[in-house]
Length: 405
Length: 90
Image 1 (cartoon, each protein chain N blue to C red):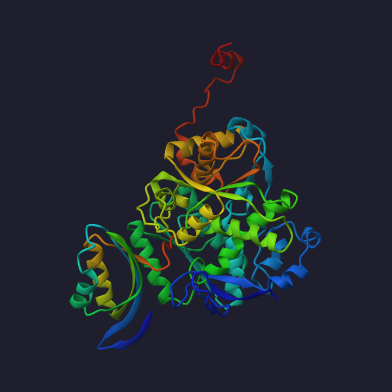
Image 2 (image 1 turned 90 degrees about the vertical axis):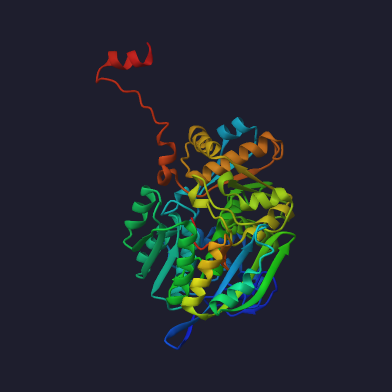
């Protein structure tokens, strides 16, 4: 049995049973899982975790699951000391958490693994999601593993690479003709009509918990240490809030020293509602119409925007937005310095990191972790124009001629 | 959420977040929505700051009326979202 006790409203604190619910009936705020931390503290230790599987499920005691888990080999991705990038940016202790290396090449495998495990526990035989790519691929892959049916809905203009990466798992793949808002409204209606486990809607509280494993891993890989600075992308804002929550949980359980991590949130300028609110000094996140190449984080009306904003402020962090040109430069910089090919969301993080270091907000000696959440092979279009190979004939003369020797 | 059938139509409820912009803040949109489309509106939460903000509404009526009402509001330039925020994720 898990140590999860109930679902609790983040705003008013009302409690609900552990069921497929996502909003407080009273104030419509998001629900989150609450735990019996006293019992967890007795059961969990650094040694016990170290003996667990080399996957996200080594932190099972901190997750709300009861039975067998649906696992396709997610987690325990590399935390790389980024010497070259650090030198370029003027940081002595820079690390990259490379979450591209999950089974479907994005961090979404963490959240989906927990959500589909719960869907099966709740007795759903069908799961569904609305996505611009990464989430849909992960849902389709996990549903296959769990022998469940899956329906995934994507906007019609999803990148071809992402569409293929979803279709290969053979879900019911639906492309929706219409604006982003049209797709949003349709999917909202679907959740009310069909008795499906909607991964990021009625299963959202459980889905959210999967994100925590990203921060747990970073702390463990740093030798049970919370970083001084975290730089992460924000779409709905959920991942950003959960990295903070998991570091806080580890501290509460005595697994790391009290946390003093500054949380830095990054968004693409073409869709930066949370950054806008941060810069305006307000707590209200006003929706925007997305217009950026960073489609995987182009959420115009972020469900957890308010909470992400609060984390950035409370932690003494900040928020910054970068242009699409800077995103492409960020992707290239990471690839050319560390050999890691990130998707556009990763470009946002690296470009944001560059801004934060150039402006002196993140200091040279601060232990900084940048989170790369998806692989670049999914969004090759954005850098394809810059590919200019040397074309030669199959002989030495031709080779040396193009080299100018 | 479909509740029951009344007079041949599907009776339903919807929860929507209506964003009010400075341009439309003075217009009684919610009142007109109820009047024109026979939709019962119930304000559950709101945050209006000066000339902009949002209102979370519960709408109750024939499903078709609710749908037409939302299309009408959207046509006025008002953004209407599901209460949870964006459902389509990366």
